[in-house]
Length: 165
Image (cartoon, rainbow, N blue to C red; front, side, top):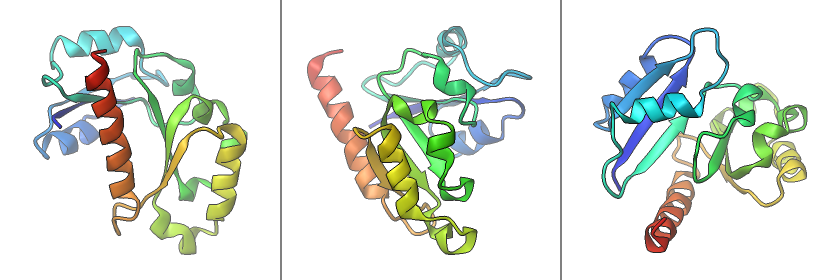
């Protein structure tokens, strides 16, 4: 499946540069002092980087758990990412970041022994604020959970292609 990425951050092009180095089209939107992307910025970016035919556009909003959750960017679905190093209380502190998510990626699970968090508490707290989301426990270092996440995403993409939306 071809992909393209719109990357949102306050400064630099580091993330978009890393993504582009993999061969995927990527464009950076810097918000300066802003804490989130807006739909008009996505619209404008797509004039400079079209999504490959039949592809998936990933939009990474500015990486925090507060501002981005409040803004609709025209996405088909939301995916939230929570690093275990952020702590098991974050779903309860910032529930809006997870309430509308169709999937939640709990990342960096290989760090659990080193950061003193409770992975089961993280999952329980996520279920408390968004019981319907698929939750993927992942580690890019070990590969844990990545196949399940990719399979889930592929299923959603296939269903969208079949529906013609």
